[in-house]
Amino acid sequence: MTQFSDLGLAKPLLKALADKGYTQPTPIQAQAIPTVLSGRDLLGIAQTGTGKTAAFALPILHRLAEDRRPAPRRGFRCLVLSPTRELATQIADNFKAYGAHLGLTVATIFGGVKYGPQMKALAAGVDVVVATPGRLMDHLGEKSAHLNGVEIFVLDEADQMLDLGFVVPIRKIASQLPKERQNLFFSATMPSEIGKLAGELLKNPAQVSITPQATTVERIDQSLIFIEAQRKRPLLAELLADRAVERAIVFTRTKRGADRVAKYLVASGIESASIHGDKTQGQRERALAAFKAGQVKALIATDIAARGIDVNDISHVFNYELPNVPEAYVHRIGRTARKGKDGIAISFCADDERPLLKDIQKATRQTIPTFDRRNDKGLAAAAAVADKLAPPEKYVDPRRADPRNNVPSELRRQRNRPNKGGGQGQGHGKPGGQQNRGRNGGGGQGNGQAQAQGQARSGGGDFRGPKRAAAPSERWNPID
Image (cartoon, rainbow, N blue to C red; front, top):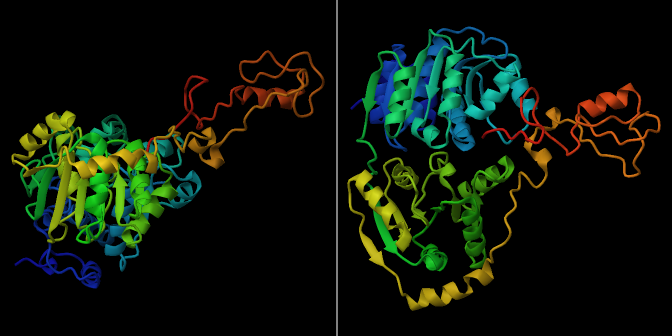
């Protein structure tokens, strides 16, 4: 049987693997590592949980350490693009763990946090950067980062990139990369659009395919329960109360739904937390940390977490609502039965979700065993009080409650606040006949400083990032 020591990796890497207790590579690692070490482009198709990150991180670290050279200022030698913040953090942590004895630098670039620390990290140059496309585009636009020194480009979870609408940013980023580089392309599925993108980025690639497209892990015990939509919450609480459920992820289709389910479970005595794109980065990190520490039994998540959570010993995955995209079902339930362990996936299906179930079973080429809990009197009674435990409430996006949350503090522009008394210029201005209405104003009679401030402001409080061409009423909101 193949060992990591048989793959030609540097001794510091083997030592780091031994420290983590890894001796035998997974199938994708055994096939991909020699190819990446040779410098050839690679197209890797493998479902989640098969060890894709180590398949590219280990040979990349070996190559960078073997050919040591300083990274260019504001640049990096290896760029890894990831669809979500959580996955970017996970990948970077793996790079740091595997390269613990190599002395290489690793940085993450993603939205939801301030620019300052990221700019500081990039200033002197970094060996490996793991980034989400939106925030990287912002740094490129601000000239706080450039791609001139990239030697290795990795696109991870490419099919989820497509689902999140990142294809255009990826093409823009790729157009700025050096022509001479190594490209590594990883995806769990290969829809036609992703195949087209792979054809644009890869040059004569080797292909590694571990499992057929859209197949589910064999060690997952799958089942599906037909249930009325309004009775899903009490059914979920009933199942989570079972002691056999040690640690579970519950997937909802919407952000509001995730918050409402988590609130109901907490009211029912089950420790739960929600995680989705409208949560701040700090909220997401705290929820995930509590889940990993066992302080929270159930993590309620949207599909943003389907591939960005790497938590050991998740015993159950619940599909509270079936996903609109059939392939997402595979990624969701792939959060359990990791590293050779068994897992259980239970899905709920209301009558209006039957077409989604049909698409899932067609895509996975299997029939999921079903149970019927419709017309259950016990659930009907519990559903009658569900809205009292977690009543619907007006939804407020926590990032938009204050528009300044959309812009890092060091890039904010001061907000124009018209004088309540009217007729007075701002700053050291002299009394005038009109209010200063900012860029579109007719000009208060203040001095030059007040006029300059007016030109740099918008009367309605227009907060935008720098150098972004947009209509005056548009607010700048960085992509994840």
